[in-house]
Amino acid sequence: MNRYLVPIMIFLVGFFAFQCGSNTQPAPGNKASSDSTQSKPKSDTVVMMAGINSKGIGRFDSIQLTHPLDQKMAANGHDIYQAKCLACHKLTDELLVGPGWYGVTKRRTPEWIMNWITNTKVMLDKDQAAQADMVVCLIRMPNQDLTDEQARQVLEFMRKNDGEK
Image (cartoon, rainbow, N blue to C red; front, side, top):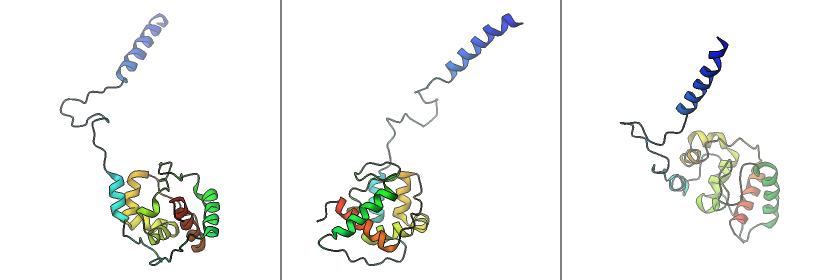
């Protein structure tokens, strides 16, 4: 019996290896196509349009921005970014775990950003722009337990990152 076991095992391994190979052709009648021919959703446009004028959901309905930029607040915001945000967000527009921060102050209102930072769970559950971001990121941002003052400092740092003077 042992002399038949080795050839049978070789046959089975070869059979399963062949069966598990990649099949780039869709099955007949299957409407799926390869990744290169599928059109990807224009999620950046959806995300931008969903929140361009939105103030989000939370207690912030009016934020007075400083002109010129408050450098001390921005520096404190940078420190907070390094401690709590750096692991998931880049300062470029590149997606890491969460979206890159470059341009966020052009895509979102200050109120939306403040409400997002301080009221993340409710925003993810109810805000259209936050839900559209989930299409891109697929991961819910955890609450960072920032105070209103810390959130405002992060906003000031975001403005500096976007080139505000």
